[in-house]
Image (cartoon, rainbow, N blue to C red; front, side, top):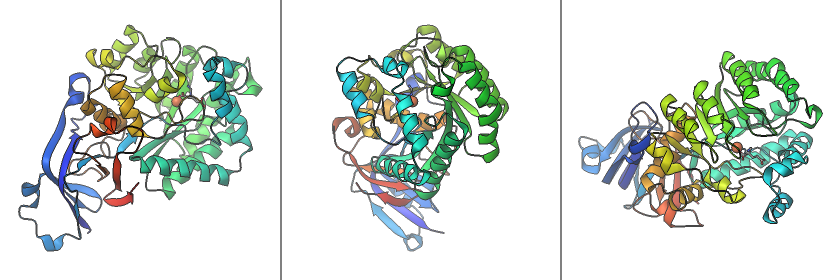
Length: 416
Ligand code: NIG
Ligand code: FE
């Protein structure tokens, strides 16, 4: 048994009450000013006031004492929505968008996501692995200890499986916990232009069963948007995915309010993501169904769109998660501190609400809140030491990483 004691820390963590923290509960943190945490074999054994944690503890049985020096200690970030598995960022397209081209128009003309598909199809698996691993390690250095990574730049069976093998290998070969999501429904591939339903059939008949049989992903996602996949196609694909045991999520109401949030509520999705254009019926549906709304402010920032209505969603009782959406086109940042800064300064979340969204509710958006996303006895000792005394430093110290040290299952894995 390995025992470690983190002492002299200003601890801030959400508390898991068995469901995503929604509405007013998102701002409720456990705060311990002079706190300590005892870690046994990578799991939290005790957490609380320093004197209480140390009471009756035989110091000779502790292998290492980590003095936090009064710094803020928070759970490692859970980033529940990324597209980290790609070849290169689309800089030419970014330049086009700066001169006024619209994201969906670029896709309609065969660019956008489809450019990244051409690159991923041609990329040797080893190289794609190296590129994805290095991005995941950069996310880790910025405090992300659990990350979701989607496929979706293959769009044929072999290339999608290649991406999912790469994603699985990144999970095995880095300190991060990696959750893979099958996103074959990211765009209609060139071979199926004008035949989106036939491509949905291919996913249902061939891709999903193979992904399930190989155990390469347990979540399935779809981009429901004008000119991409319809709500009816989403309903069909996600029903098939659920019958194979996949949990489901939706890129919902990002540019147009198609009713993606409503579909997420209808199919009891783990999360509905984006929601920049979501209307009130969709938002109320998420609250009633207990579906997490995963907001991606770095995407609104990069696309220069109005941010999702976070405060309104909170008032309606929705549980919010925050994610980077890191991808080669619409949002190119793997930094959760940057995302938290946008959430606080541009969407009006309090630092406490943003922390809950970036940890506990992110874990709920992935169905793994019993292991990560909060610090309590039995949970993984995934935590960060920050260069300040409260989580507000994450939003305040802009443009640099306020993360001093990253621990995964009690081990120091990054000191940026
Ligand atoms: O979540 N909106 C669709 N998919 C991604 C963007 C992917 C890309 O542009 O490569 C998103 O923003
Ligand atoms: Fe996305």
